[in-house]
Image 1: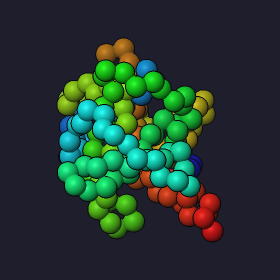
Image 2 (image 1 turned 90 degrees about the horizontal axis):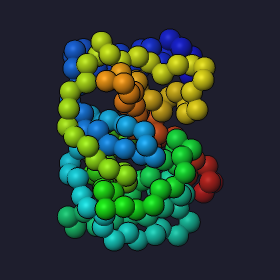
Image 3 (image 1 turned 120 degrees about the vertical axis):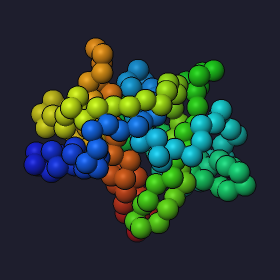
Length: 170
């Protein structure tokens, strides 16, 4: 992705608003935030069923209100180490539009923090140089207090992982 694409993507996440309502959570000591409107529910950990032959990114499914939904570990997309389950671990059930289809996906987190507002004026596109993660996986970095909150691009992450799965089975 070239820098102009990152900057336009950075503005697109705000959809013309000055603030964005988000749910914040932790993964391996980093604070992430996803739009509150895509969050369906926050769950304690549930029994998981491994899916033979699946990629590690979405290696299992859970039963969510009678529906079988994939359980994703976006740490893998960001190249992070797997984390041990703790008393604070949660599953955030999201509803995303992927390839024109509304899809429920569970996202495993280390800890869910709060629903809060982030300001567009405190946000920046991810730097092109020096990032340890793919810049297309990040909408923006938002400065709050003394830390940065990462707004991941879930559509890019899940679309990319889906493409990897299709290539693996071809």
